[in-house]
Length: 167
Image (tube, rainbow, N blue to C red):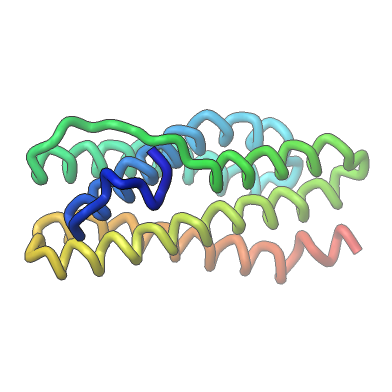
């Protein structure tokens, strides 16, 4: 089913589709994070990725909870956007030999993922509220807040140390 599929008729259909999209994305991120941890050389970057791996497991659980609250089984739809972001990160990381530059590239890749997630969760929170599902919105908001915090931590790490070392 494409994003603008004939199967999407109502706002609820759109909400469910977006929920399936981010569910797929979170699972792809879970699979990609161990590789990013292995490639990172700065201890604080590795630690940040390890923390986010644990958080991402919780994000998947929260999405399963929202599916249940919404009365549907957890299901994914392929998300070409996250596939592309992860594929690009893998390609760039594979081309960089200088480990300090690699750390900067890993942060940039991680922030691309975070910005995608912030967009999706922000939209889902707004739509859940429009649909009268404050319960779902509250659960999704927890994850949105964590994604924003991760992005801020990555920015601080990049600007305070990693980018300078790479330069």
